[in-house]
Length: 339
Ligand SMILES: [Zn+2]
Ligand SMILES: [Zn+2]
Image (spheres, helix red, strand yellow):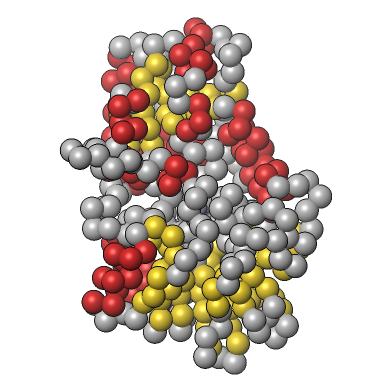
């Protein structure tokens, strides 16, 4: 049996007649999380985790037709048992578990195995077939533990403050920005761009309490901002808003920062390998914990990663998808350098 197939519209469950994270419009879309490459506009009806619904309404359409479930809640769609389980990637991110006649498929969307202080912690789900991403599916990607990572970031902020510098973080507006806010809460005043603030408001509409922030724009009170923390989305790098921030020290937060050759380094004073995706060991441990007989590898280092899985005795196949193209990790991907 195979419960899911890969079509030109997205991952399809024929028995249940619905798609998971379709990239073309369909009647019934089941959504793993709110990032733009997984949650696309145009479908008639959406099913997602309750924390993802306000993100879809903000990013796609306020009047979107959406049903929601909580983690571990079960619904039946045309006889297929569906439930969502924490993926640890961003707030509301879910692995989709499908069961039919005792056969189980899990579509993990994007996931991260380490708890980030905010997103519900990743839970491995046993299954027969598992769909995994491989954004950082190379052995060089090996993240610092959350605590050590934030200790390093805080040390950098303290060094900046000692020189009257403002610590500016470039971080994707959904996921990473909130993770930084949470991890740096209480260290200094936190200013965020309006794009981040809009997402914060959507997230808080679910009853989640985020750290207090202020909005930063061109009308900023410089004295108020100086020595504090500013979080901006990647599109703001190199703009007038950054230039206006008094005495700015800029840090880029992305998994790609682990690779020193990244061109993005040149635009920044520091880089922190903060990622919402699993690293090499995280991917492997998650896959092993599913006990799956068959693994499908979607976006990222699909060729290398699926080859490695087969070598260690886990049957794996690459599948072509449209994911990753609007993922901040992909946008921030280092261009090939000869150094
Ligand atoms: Zn994502
Ligand atoms: Zn993705």
